[in-house]
Image (cartoon, rainbow, N blue to C red; front, side, top):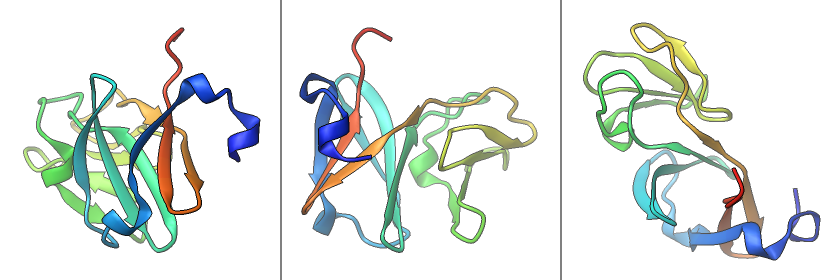
Length: 115
């Protein structure tokens, strides 16, 4: 998705692309929401940073880059980086998935205030 496809009011800059080390998740407060952002190769993903099962910080978990999943550091539940969907027990509820937009060297998330 490009900048032209989205209302500017729904975009929030989270960081510069250069700030993201490959396969190193970071936790950020984005418009009052706890978000985990991670770069895998040249793709950037963002999901809610708090595990839906045990409220642990997902950015402290183990990244499974080959399957695009993050593993919760407490109970080994996993979440899909593309959607936030829970992919391994004991996690069953998803975390929020965010649409990521890269514009040049900047990374934005789509944060729709009406949701």
